[in-house]
Amino acid sequence: QVQLVESGGGLVQPGGSLRLSCAVSGRTFDNYAMNWYRQAPGKERDLVASIDESGSSTNYAESVKGRFTIYRDNAKSTVYLQMNSLKAEDTAVYYCNAVRKLASLRYYYWGQGTQVTVSS
Image (cartoon, rainbow, N blue to C red; front, side, top):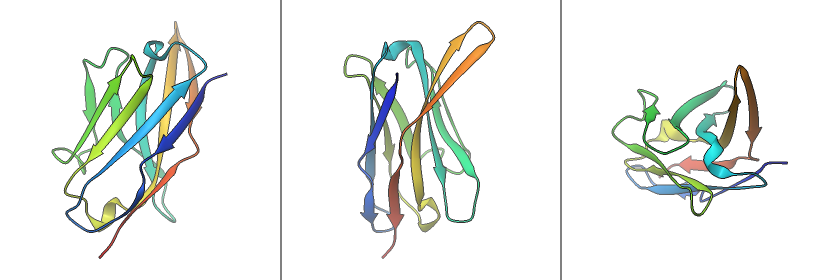
């Protein structure tokens, strides 16, 4: 069983920064690609950032490019999302997601989410 535990959310003023963490336990961390999603009230859950198993490849939603950075520490089984220059529209619940790829199969695991509120 894979368990994901997010932390680091909170209230921050516009222009501020936060770093989210997602600690993964239960399996070999570097077998999993990792993603951060977010869901604002009344909206769908959207992909924010992705990182491959080795940490050598990342992708970002257009809305966060240049402001957010995803990175991982495989020795600590943790993935991070550094969020800078935060805007009110970044307010959402942020979810960590792990994907295990086995041939054509995909196994998905989710954390419980952490609230990020950007407000003055």
